[in-house]
Length: 202
Image (cartoon, rainbow, N blue to C red; front, side):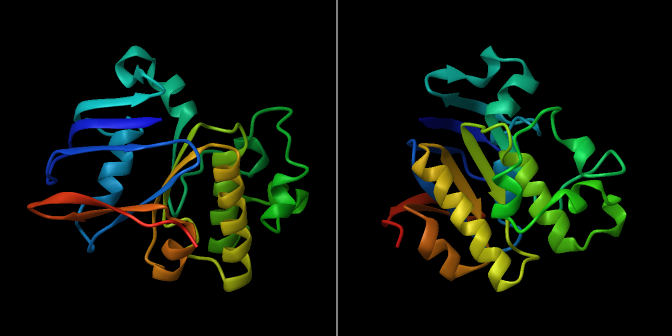
């Protein structure tokens, strides 16, 4: 279980909620309402007050890198620090099933990142986020640059994470995607106490 208690993110009301294993929580709100800031705070990428527990362990009890190995933030346009995609994956990473699930192959891994399309980089970034099987996925517009076919493949991979009892928080501009994936919704709006609405995923 991921439990957030009194999370204090600048510009947002104090947040408290829980997400259980196998559940997808959609974080919704207008542009500028703080959705990305909330995800980054949970991942311990930006400073924030309050407490975040994963399976009973509070984030302050772990070193930052170890927390982020288990609680993974994936942005719509991932950052890259090496020339090719392959250099961003752990040595010996098992990619035989993961890459084809996103319509990727070794050519995408070995081409310079700068030569990949925005959609290819986004799919490669999603693969990078999933490869070491984190317990929690914080997905920020994970299919925003993808065509319908690629987006559907990414959604199937997200559904597989839920079947594997992982926890997913998702921000998406695609209302139909939220309907398909989310079991519950957290509404954010400046100055308004967030409301967690239940609703089983389709």
